[in-house]
Image (cartoon, rainbow, N blue to C red):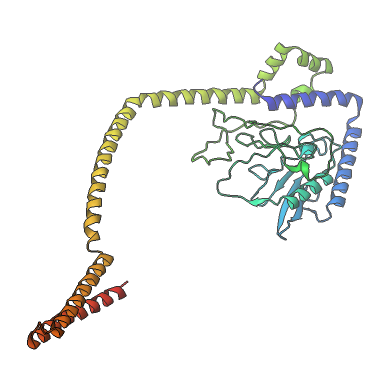
Length: 389
């Protein structure tokens, strides 16, 4: 069937109806309440720092101290039919950890995934606190990346099968699967091996379901309203046990009764509307195909022109760089250094000619002063240019 939530609810109601024939409602509620009080008592004994936030003790906050002395808060929510229904554990701080999904819900503990009324809530919270101390959670990044851990065996913690555990209302789409890394360090609380789930992330649906992705945030998300799941089916309460059994065995009668439910009819109408809107959108996109092809051709022509102009620009930029290199500061300093050295060499030659009496005194003084003045001017300009940054 295409409505697993309704089927699960229906099957639960059938089993409860069979059980109610054997146990009186008052006795059933009394036993459930007693079991709930016993679970809460064990939970508070194992976690003395837990603080009740509601008079009926259905919501608790449990502070967990991390190795760096910082603290995170774990919210424990007990549903009305707890412990028949599993508790919901959520970390209120924006952190990342293999035990948590994108909304901070604890999904990686085996007992939460295989919950039954005899599971010990106090031990579960203690296990989570111990795990956070052994592997502290990390601050949530803007765009978290999926992490895959090697599979281990014999651990209380196990990977979620593509989403949250039972009792969670968040859709599991896009939640990456992982295998728990805790088996090598935590005590062995069970004997059955933990299976390794590979590629168990559920594919994105075609309809506009809310998507929780751990790889890339979507620029736009459209939420499709979901029908409210009723807590009970009044029509079943009016049927006898034989009629309920007949529905469970006769496929045609069950289909007829199931499709007559208002919630199913509403979901079917919503599905048909989505199909029609998707079809209309597809036709609209196909009608714009010629326009898109023309724009693609124009873009290709512009890209070719851009490539040609860029190549021409790069050639001219290379020529400009070569020309400007001649007037750079290092080049000018080098030319001034060579000119000053040449002036110094000519002044030494004039002195040698004068000492060998090859140059008259008056000519020597005139030429020597001119060459030395040129030498000192070049050195002064070179030193001043070197001071400029």
